[in-house]
Length: 266
Length: 292
Image (cartoon, rainbow over all chains, first blue to last red; front, top):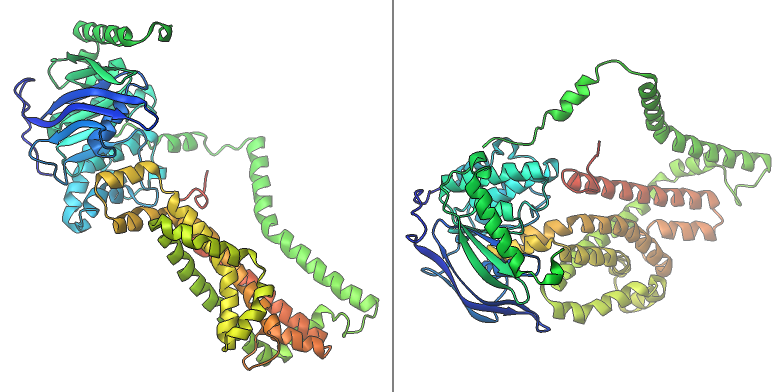
């Protein structure tokens, strides 16, 4: 894998990768999923989209992924969108059950018409990054939920994309596996200098992982506040148990609560 | 990064149980052993018993062989008439497998066409359904009026019966591809062909194989029924013709012998398609993988 420049400059000095300008998304039937969403994603950002269900965070991700078109507004890639720009991890591992782990990770290359032999090393490297090098020839059904998710992450990483989209990837996993994967994700990010947009409804996950938290509200879906977490990476247990972490989690949680209607707070 | 999931956990547990068997485990093991033997012994025993009873009924009641031949006489006829019946079997097999091959090509081809174009599906699926729901015995006489070649007529009949399960199942399978995987294909800008080749066809494979198992049996039925309708004219006649012919001559043992061959052929086709299905799916599909 050809590495990006691994050193990430501090927030405010990063090169932009992607801009969303005043993006609206209205579904058939007039439901406003997003209203006037503006967002600049910079090289090396780890952005969390945090919000209650129905706030349009997954819609925003699908718009960026090109699976939907905005009703209004524009989504602009800096320097145009190339073919290897995007890696995606869904809430489910979304692996092809008939293919081995290595073949699953090979998929993005295969769709570019590259032969397996020519990208063998990249696939092995990507699997090694997520700790699954020994399982290259296993089938997905032989793996645990956490391991399947790792394969999914390896597949998103393998093309070394400019932007990785993650749609609540760990929501279906147990707490222990989830924390382990959070730690590993940060290690990966430090290793690759990747840019990530991470959708979650967990305040603690977002504070632990990201350097920019975008708190969203529902009806209509919108960003209400950006919270910057400028604790240095790598982060670990020290960060998870620090007063600063608690303070930001508190702030984030309060912001989130303030966006809810009175009847939604129990 | 290290692997979190401990894959050796289970093995430790198993060996931790040690070689000591308690009474309950022994009972369980015995029950399993009995079941694995009974799986084979029981059906063989019941079939043998039935054949023996058949033989006894014929002998005890002194039933003449032109009404009901005993099993011994049927086997004897099978051996004596092996040349005639063998050739007829080959003809039936030829029609069955050619029809099945054309049904696979036609069924999968149409299914792929339907999956690619909704307009094609709207236009042609009514025809497929009409062909399927109209009993083949009622179409066959017309086919033999319009189609000059007897072989082509037989083939057409067998094909009509066999192709629908393949078409219906494969169409369903092509549409059953996982939604997230489809999104992934879109994100990676897969072409139509890549989408078909790497996502839809593998997703459809279990469904297609299920259809194949049904179609294999139906192709044989179609071939036999068509031959009944086609009647006794022409050369190179199959097993159904032999049954008809033997019936006219009151050669009941030969009717049974031909019937036996048809039944065996059906069983072999079913076993073969089941085996193919198992081999193709055993690595990944829930229907074929073994659970502990």
